[in-house]
Length: 184
Length: 90
Image 1 (tube, rainbow over the protein chains, first blue to last red):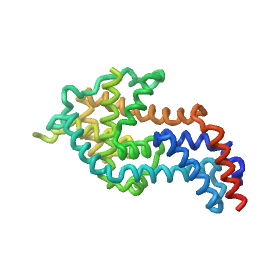
Image 2: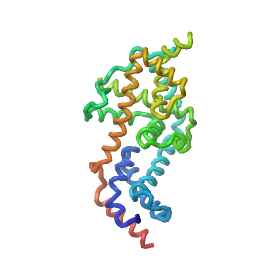
Image 3: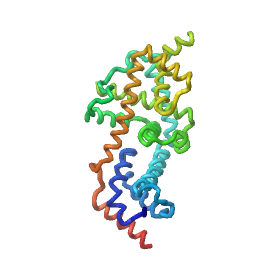
């Protein structure tokens, strides 16, 4: 398979743009990343081995650029995040680890595997995702949406393995609590 | 508190294990402790179901947003392709 840069924009620009915008939520930045992706790709056409499709190859380049953004955004925020983590930790559980009465999970009516997709619920889910601290959202997205290896995430975002598990746990606790608060 | 009682009370640890399980397999001990906890805790059973649903919904949501309803404007695209052609002709 060969690369055809003359068709890149018409074939892949919208796809790459939507890939970027769902992950970083900033139109201008997403546009910049698409442009940077194409320009970077032109510089390394030699590394394309034709094993994957052109789109997969371009997406991999874009992914690295998105990770750079995550890293930049979470730098300096780590301290604030740590403070936030402390604050939120005490929230959900009693000292013995039991759910606090007001935070105990209640059914949403979406627990059935074959429930119909509800637009309003999806909308709330999206908003709740945006509310997560930057670093948590990056970890969550890389793990649960892009299926990245745990080691890759830790290396790329410079978090320790134990911190990774803490973030995975807290991100879900907060996301779920946000849904419960806004949906029921 | 006895070992078993600790497991039964500790929803914080149980939810941690539920999340860990969604990413990698648990050790035998962890799996045992989670089973014991979930057996007696309806809150964490709900949490566990919701956690899985959230994972699959988030994934579906991100992939559905990847449909053509998000697109770049034509001017931007034209300029971008021009830029690429320029690089190619260097």
